[in-house]
Image (cartoon, rainbow, N blue to C red; front, side, top):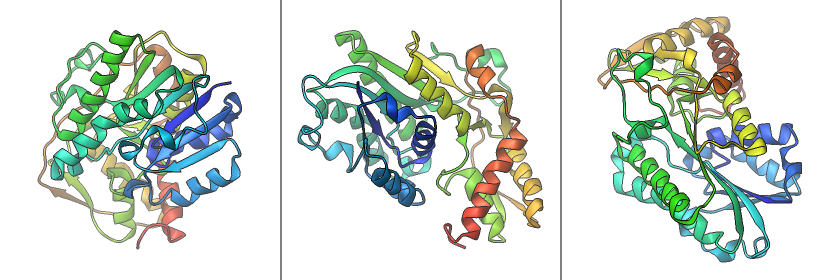
Amino acid sequence: MKTLILTGCAGFIGFNFLNHFIDVGGIGRYERIISFDKMGYATVYNREDYEQICMEQPKFIGICANIVSLNKYCVEKYINSDTVIDILDFASESHGDNSINSPSEIFTENSLIPVVLLKILEDAKIDTYWHVSTDEVYGDLPLDASQEQWFDITSQYKPSNPYSASKVAQDAYLTSLKHTFDMNVKIIRMANQFGPYQHIEKMIPASIIRALNGEPIKVYGNGSNLRQWTYVGYTVKLIDDLIHYGTNDFITHLADPKNLFDNNFIANKIVESLKRYDVDATIEYRPGHDRSYALKVSQVVESIYTESFDESIERTIDFYVKGYTDGLYKK
């Protein structure tokens, strides 16, 4: 049996994946799971649940450390020349505004993650490196872009901020290893995700918490900023299917194409849904830039995202209202 290396599994998408993986018995497919996470600010609300998993799952080994500051001696008792590994790499500082405030730090850290990770694991035999990337590597689209203009897997890199540039650096480094050393690299590029366990700095949870605090929901620009709002629960199932069954594709796009909505739509949906809790939320507009991101996906991927946006957003709102009521989020 192989060893699975996970990175960034106390963060939003990683933690949703981990919960799904445990629920479907995925841990049983591996000899052991080694998880690297630096437990930064974006994991603060998930930390207790993540640490509980570390204690309860005998095959699960959690290593709390920043990958870029580690060396291979941290895994030498688990990894040797006979160890076959899969890598599922979620780790990245993913907040665009933070990358603008600290461009060199964010770019350096993110771009070094696959470099240092592979150095740490150089004594093992790598079966597949699954790298989780983003639609932002392609830059943005005109707000009036047709579906034919959406990004496909051959679209050019056009990063528009230091975060997206750092993801390009990760993608490019791993692509070079595929071509130079025939490493079995698979890149998963995802559209905008939402759902449980996302840090409350992001739009949907931030809007919910603001409304519960009696503050207005903030919308930047004129609210025409478009995203494929994709529910994370379906995305992590697709990721699990990919690593379980494999794929011949080098790059896979994961997005819900039917959910291309602007921020006005999202904000108003939150306002309407919160009425179930007798919350009368308001919307406030702030200066900002409006742009669009959209990925073309395969028919198989499209068929997985069956739930309506209304159902997904209400489930998400219920999660954050419960967390707020339980005192998890600051009132």
